[in-house]
Image 1 (tube, chains in turn brown, blue):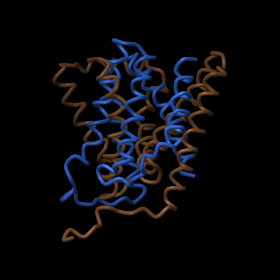
Image 2 (cartoon, each protein chain N blue to C red; image 1 turned 135 degrees about the vertical axis):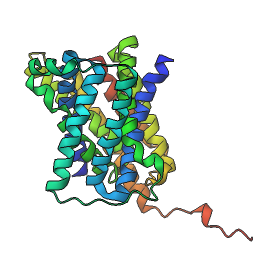
Image 3 (cartoon, rainbow over the protein chains, first blue to last red; image 1 turned 180 degrees about the horizontal axis):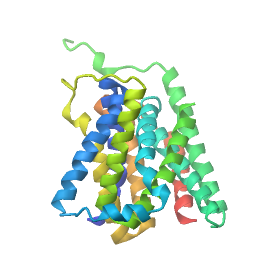
Length: 157
Length: 140
């Protein structure tokens, strides 16, 4: 069961991006980002109430590392940019390039915190980018070949 | 260009995870999510008004498309659950499998009116490179 949930984390990330992309088709990217936070906040508020969480966390905020305050704002960049790219690239290219970017920055963060650079991770990023690039080339080739569209056959044969 | 933007977006995810992680450590899961969404909503509204955004009616939009924010929150809770019981490595790996499979299926069939990028056997080569690369990222 928990393995299915782990799988679903990946599935849900992709579905959320597609939902936002479709919504942006109707109302534009700016309002789409706003909507994303409105529905998200509504959901979290429900969970907060159902779990019976208390507001005792508020005083703790003053002792929290300053960087912790900016996650929500960085989320805006993430939601907005991911909505832009998923409408321009194939979904696999968009999600995998995001993943590679995330891991590259992860390497930088590790490095800044004094954790050694890992050649394996850098090699992994290069492989992902190569794979995405290769499949993009395949897509460009496919787009040039005129395809026979079966659905356009007349029905009264 | 959009490919670079995709990588930039991913880089922002990494910093976001770092700062959200700090917040969770300090005040706990759900309060952190609440704080993140409140600050995010304030920020996004400021941005909306300063960039002269205008409101469009939500009438006629399929309800499911409005729920991207909900799916995002569900995703966070799933991730927390999985991290706690099977650990980071297995979670990351399975999450990646989920991402690759879902992306490939939606690309191929063009579900939800997305542009179709048909799957052809040749693409297995690219997917293999991506998967091996991802394994390297997780294992090292």
